[in-house]
Image (tube, rainbow, N blue to C red; front, top):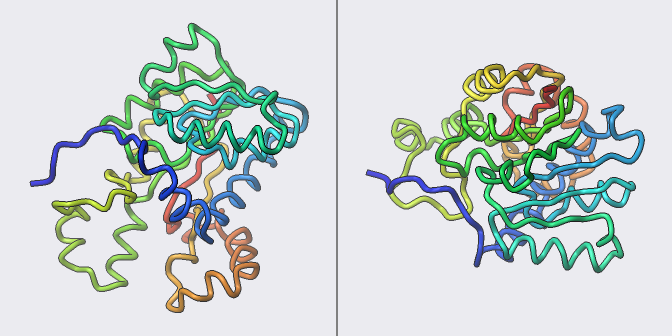
Length: 257
């Protein structure tokens, strides 16, 4: 039996997270896809107020702040927030930020009714015990008619990749292990489930993109680095088309409330 799930907090793991996720081709490609999708929104054609829920070390938030947007960055991890604040200060963008140390579940009460036209929640749901209720919480902090940018770990892609790798016992166990790797999401999500939760919360889908549709499946992993530019171009060309959009290691949805 696997240990009972608890919401994940990355205190004491922030630097390792930065090294293993953000400072890799995986992290670079994630940022490229998210920025492409977000900058297509008319909402961001002029300065906008953005709520970044579970924004971690603020990589995407920094890029939005540099474009003139005001970003309210929240996270359950004080260590992550400290890194984000230091990085914003280092590039003279601190005035563009507000920081709040809070789990997603209590954020709406802390904001006391404040709502945002654009809410980001990236790579958070898969670390929560109850991701379905988190969608409802996000709806509460989104202004009427606003946009939610939601990215989550795709269980369909996790299953597909592990079958390709020959990890048949792992797949038969529904990708569950007794001792999870600390930086591996503890609860991969089915796209159909997330879409149903979003519909129940009153969201409509604007767009869907796969994140790392090809990157993780390369036989020669060195190509992720040596031919990164070509790989990124192909990802951006095809990652909103099926079947590729559903094979991304992460799924990015733009939703209207």
